[in-house]
Length: 313
Image 1 (spheres, rainbow, N blue to C red):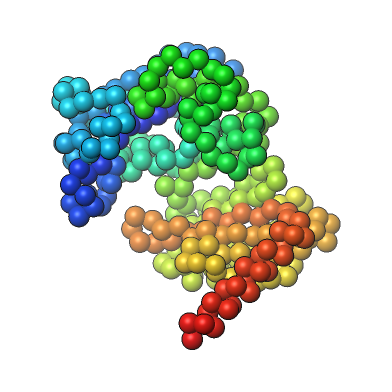
Image 2 (spheres, rainbow, N blue to C red; image 1 turned 90 degrees about the vertical axis):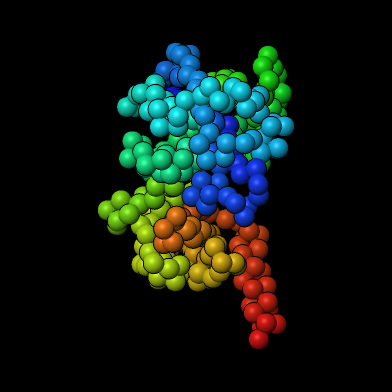
């Protein structure tokens, strides 16, 4: 097993949303990666510049940020070739590590656009180093920039940020300083390639909460009526928890509920409805213990929703 710490740079449509390719809002133009062994010791690096095929002109904001110009991109290689070389570099037992969850999403979106997504089967367990940094050194909820993390740990800044390889190196340096137990306890799951059948649905228990990722449904209403999606089980003991406040929607995507476990007290359920590229939906449900104050906030949220609906009538 190896850890693959990688970073991407991408371009977007320079002519605005009206001329954007809907299936590819961000086109990858650079891949940088650092391979670490299972002990998180440096092994080797990977770097490729990709010649753009969809947005051939750099967006002005992209120009301001990245350390590439049109001439460098013109000498790049095609995306299919680059991603195949990258996956060969990664090897069959790679664990991906990124700063945040966006890079892994965009990698798969680009692979899907170019018809090579079958080379990388998901859903993917990965290490979100941004999240792990927050859990290790801050409050566990904040999400700071990569440069902030380097400054916080007083690590050397010897390269420009916003270069794929440089940012991968910086991310690897921070990752090397995360405790093993935190990495084991707080892995992340990328669901761009979401479960397609009941057999593929994901049940995971982490330190402090449980997560369930459902199969696809035609609509959010059908998803929320599914027995497994609507059930509540204690994240500590796994036993069925009786609902004190049934599922309700705070907006078009998030649902909340309150339940009680006789042994472990009040629990909060949160379900996010995610939409696939094909227009179907799936649910990501988390359940965790909450204090009386947090439970009261959920109740207040429901009351606020009731008042808002009455005002619309």
